[in-house]
Amino acid sequence: MKNLPIGTQSFEVLRSQDLLYVDKTELIFQLITTGRIYFLSRPRRFGKSMLISTLDALFNGHKELFEGLYIDDKWDWSNSNPFIRIDWTAIKHDTPEEIERSLSVRLKIKARENEITLFSEYVPDCFRELITELHRKTGEKVVVLIDEYDAPILDVMSKSPAALKAIQESLQSFYKILKATDEHLQFVFLTGVSKFAKLSIFSALNSLDDITMDESYAAICGYTQEELEYYFSERIDAMVTKDGDTRENLPDHIRQKYYHPLFLSWMNVLGFKAQGEVLTGQGRIDAVLEQTDTVVVCELKYHSKTKTATLLLHVIKQIHDKNYPQISIRRFPTVGTGSRSFRQGVPTWGQTPGRESINALMDILGLLREISRQRQKDRPARAWHSPERKSDAGWTF
Image (cartoon, rainbow, N blue to C red; front, side, top):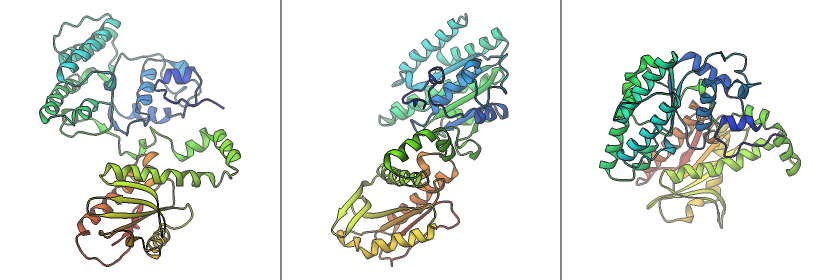
């Protein structure tokens, strides 16, 4: 049984130490051979840095690291491209001045490694000069890999608007160089947590392909159900033996444990005071979401074989049978959600953020907007779900 690469962000370390690797190189090969300039947004701790590291090793021609992987016999290992890799989490970026100093040092180090002298004074000009000189010197176009492109913006958003604007302007000047040097670029890949539409990179790079919501690349980071069952098969068997469970039932039990905390995390982000497993005289409530003038009672159900509509009716009936609304004198909307596939609904949020996951989130957000609109009105009790969706939510008022 291979060791897990916990905390490892280096593809070279992972492969050289024979740690467990879920082969993503088929999607990487598809990515490189069908386009040039990409953007991918994923949450933190979702494998973006490992993806960047894998691309780094690939374009550097480290064939030995890809032995036995999908791309091993499909990549042209006789060529390697010069590359520039920028990880914004490793660069000081609290002010434009820090960005200028830190980036300047890193660009000059990269230039020295390739026996290039940079004569430009400002960072954007140094970036342009480095790209063009790498192409001229090697005869090969340049690969640019940028990890966490939005880190400087996210880290300064809580500060003054003036500080945020200064950082944005600094980054705009830097990212515009990618368009100006397009003829020298072989491949560009940027990752981030968010997509800031006003940042010039998305308006300047007309050919940039945002694959965040592209189902073809939904599994390029994170693990799919099939990958979990294949690559972690030995560990699943060990869990079955330890817990006295069956391999057939174990995935459902894991999902149920995962579903609730993930739901609570999202609700906290959305501004609710979210509590799970709340004990009352009437029974245990899966989740209670509180705001100043509203309490939302949630019952969350998952079952792999029961139809979603049936789950929803069961949820609503349970809430009313136990008379949960009597717990509080405030207006008391009640919420139920149901899903019957691991690839559908809320459980997918932490797994593969494709369109199914976004549909699930949109349903929950729509549900909460409706609660907000109706909480000051008298509404008859009703249940709702959206059968045309791949994910479903239900609520009553």
